[in-house]
Image (cartoon, rainbow, N blue to C red):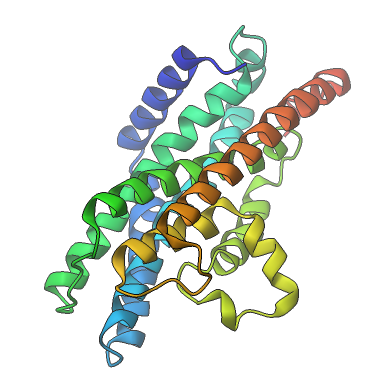
Length: 261
């Protein structure tokens, strides 16, 4: 059972940590921004929709990279400071706390995405006008929520591992590539398609592209189809994350290894 009050408190706490600890600016905003700028340099001679494709991919990279990086460290930071066990014994479910943090982290990624759009428009002269502005905003919100839920799934494993930093570094770019955010799914190997189709971010990215690029719909789903699959896969991952938190919390409490670092 999710607690809205706990989610709001966790979101507020994560925001305070971000503003009082300047080191988070580098992995949360600067690093994804630099990666996207490099990508725009690589695509700068292509022109047309391909450049907008690169901009959209950079925006998704900012949201996802920030979500998985900050969400992994939030649990590790609690473990280092000895506050994880105090959070675990509160009435609010740990899943609600992590989800609130993931929402803030995804929101920071959204700000990074907006910065990428501004730089693409004014520094590179790329026309970032989208075909369906309202549909784009709805798809952007759905993608942000899906990435927060995906961060929750990995956050559950951070409860029982002290190698959260290594884990997120291994998962950040494979999932980014599998989602087809910057590279079309058709260029990926056939065996990787099922993994791509299982990710909520894949369908969120498809909805963003359909709302932005005229005539874009390689899978024949349409905007509503892609948005519906985003909502469906997000719900599935949310249920999986809640089960994982319940199972792994119980296991960690029985083993008594929460504060071991």
